[in-house]
Length: 77
Length: 195
Image (cartoon, rainbow over all chains, first blue to last red; front, side, top):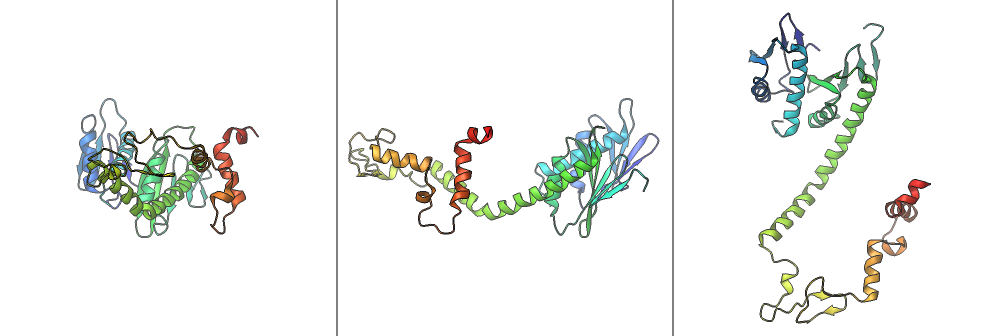
């Protein structure tokens, strides 16, 4: 699975919209933006490296957060 | 695949992660989400694939001590667990709605409560039916009415039945021995645990 691609100073996350709808992704980004440098562009989520974070780890935590949003009550499906 | 990789049933195990393949015709997406959510305390989860043909769930341990094979098997168990839950919830949906509806209507006061139906507003006498027959006591109120010994004994029998033949009287095809064992376990749990 090639959902996560680690680059030099950032991590690019390409999630399947069938399982992670855009609305949920945007909601997740709104939450993570407070502490991480994260953006959403052309269907991809980009997590930039800053002083204290590991972009790959943040990417996995972001995916877990999206799953909890889906499970927690969003009735998109 | 390297020597460390292996395939077990629907689980493809790699060095640092595993991929579980799921047939979407067997398990709806809601069940897969629930099973994946169950594992979030131990693994990271990413879901991919084709919702029509094959769903792939990638799991990565958060801790080195986590056994990917065991987590994979546990995930399969949780798929079945949540599938059963979903089926039962669907079957009981109408019954649950009726119970909630009745409870809310009782609270709102759209229907009089069962006790209030029997109170005569002029004399405040309660004509609630009891096992002995209707009471016409001027001071009778629920919980102040004492039961006769015989009625009390019958009530005790219903709460803690000792004889399944009486409990299931008239009901055919009951495995009374099996039910006795279950009920005995429920009421005499300590004895069973100490065996």
